[in-house]
Image (tube, rainbow, N blue to C red):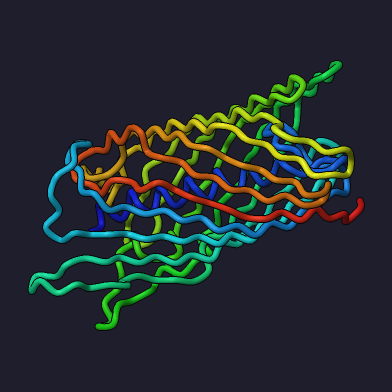
Length: 318
């Protein structure tokens, strides 16, 4: 259960970070806009509530589906509350407090179905600083690039226990117990109604609870969006577009020893929808499907991941 759980937790971290990057870009002076290379205008702020659903259920050995005698099913729901603030021109910060619920259902040795094994509570807090270092405006479009850096702090609980008082494995704990660092570069290229967004992310993990060090993560992500509908200002706007994501996960380490049933490569594709009913509100819906699951050793495969949320733009001044 530990090897499966490590990968499940890593997927959880990736989805949280991907969601946070997306939301940390949307608010700009004239309203919200789906551009990854932008920062909040000076004094601008936003409050975001989001819900992310993901899980695992099909056992795989070296990426190939096999029969799972335990018929395991992992469900994870993350509800991050995010606050962003443009404290200076081309500079912003993001604070995220996630609420996490994890459940494991499986068939026991006696053939009975055991459900709801897992923990819930406040997860690890994320602090990000973002700086836009390139902006090239032109008639009908713009090109912007920014970098992001910041830590994930070990604030989440990692002492959750089952009904018998046994400590749950790291996969089912709300927190990781580790202090990790994230680095990313993201860019946007806008031509009329089309926007091409690309980002590269690297997450460096340290050893956490139960002597487990999660494998580091490298991810390339692209969002190609089209402004499908735009009413006269301040009327609604609607964006649609595909998502592409390629991830490389290094092996976990337990007591310094590489875990064979962890890490691998994954490719996702899906669709996102952004609806802006007026300049200071944004609603989003994302769905991503695993197309390639080249996982090391024996691990549970990935389910489609789904997220939806709302952003309210604010102004704090500076």
